[in-house]
Image 1 (spheres, rainbow, N blue to C red):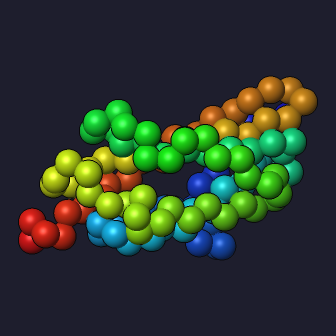
Image 2 (image 1 turned 60 degrees about the vertical axis):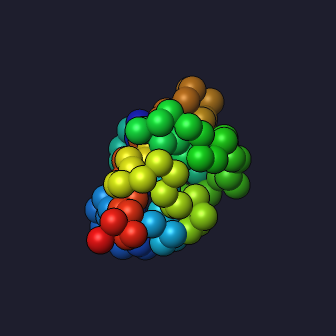
Length: 116
């Protein structure tokens, strides 16, 4: 049974960064955990990126190949400033197994460098 999805910015499982510069890529690693908090391979995984400020979908649902650790690259183009100033983004990750679906939301800021 899946109980949570861990999201980290490196292979050591460290807490993710919460801010990137506009146009900068960001790598996230997703790991599904069972009720014993052991890393497991779910039957399916997917993610999307949404602007919290505007509600705009930056990247629609994208399927991932399930594994014990799945890398997601948020490109510099996906981290482009769309409405000026610092923008808040959400990466919504989902994993499914025979018991159902779990979801995790990771929020971060994209900083407008032109305003500096």
